[in-house]
Image (cartoon, rainbow, N blue to C red; front, side, top):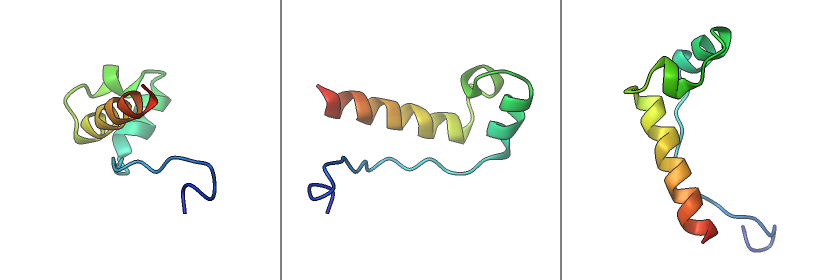
Length: 55
């Protein structure tokens, strides 16, 4: 289906987390606000997957 839509489907999943909203309210990135959090790990995994697929 992704090919039909001319898009990419990623395996990484980014969970919902209150920390994301808290970081936004504090005008910080999630990496600054909660560098060792689960959602931060999820985002890092997505970034790595994205960069790998874009090569």
